[in-house]
Amino acid sequence: MTERDNHIHMVFKCSPFGSISHSHGDQNAFTLHAFGETLAAITGYYGGFGVDMHTKWRRQTFSKNLPLFGGKGQYGENKNTGYEGHQDRFCIEAGGNITDFDTDSEIKMVEGDATASYKYFVPEIESYKRKIWFVKGKVFVMQDKASLSEEKDMTWLMHTTFANEVADKSFTIRGEVAHLDVNFINESADNIQSVKNVEGFGEVDPYEYQDLEIHRHVEVEFKPSKEHNILTLLVPNKNEGEQVEVSHKLVGNTLELTVDGETSVIEL
Image (cartoon, rainbow, N blue to C red):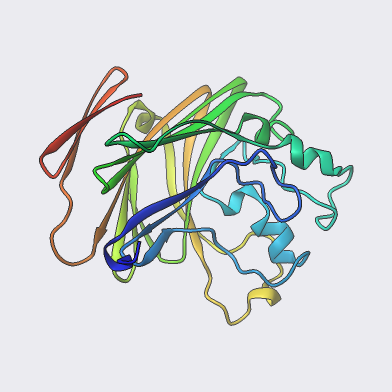
């Protein structure tokens, strides 16, 4: 942890307290930090409790590294957002839970269940879990699985303060020192409709961020379905010097991941 210029880590949140008080609509969200830079971030600025940036952006799911279903996210309203019919209990009911983790094995893992977090605005959701593996201390594998009672599109979001380079079925976040390659590695890639770089803060009053840098995020749009199973490979590297070599083979629910010549097996 003291060697930040060589360190890679991820911060993951899935809280049973939901979006009450200072918490946000961000169960199963994460940030990813590598080589001294925050490559996958939470975007926006904090200008005070109850201001536009707080209520219309920072509290909301669409400012986090999370999916939306049919364009809708988790319950992140409060008394300041002006949402008609708000009750604080809705924030608590939108809580999540860590359902599994392993910090002792060679491959580190955490799983969060955020089904209830989406239930208010996406009543059709039956299950949504995110599972993340950290392999060889170098790369991350992420699985997002969702079941719904009717077909809905899924928008997979990743935010950053750096530049994005998007392709048909992948993208790269390009920092000043490091970069993050993001690839969708299972059959879900065939269901991608678009990969877009989006700038700005939605409906936030521009006065609140005048003279400040405009942040951006990538929106990966998946076709409507009752079942979404998105498997993502996240590989951070320094911009200069030797690069991590990664290859994978997916057979059924078994992922063979080779990192710098060493193979690990993940049962999905």
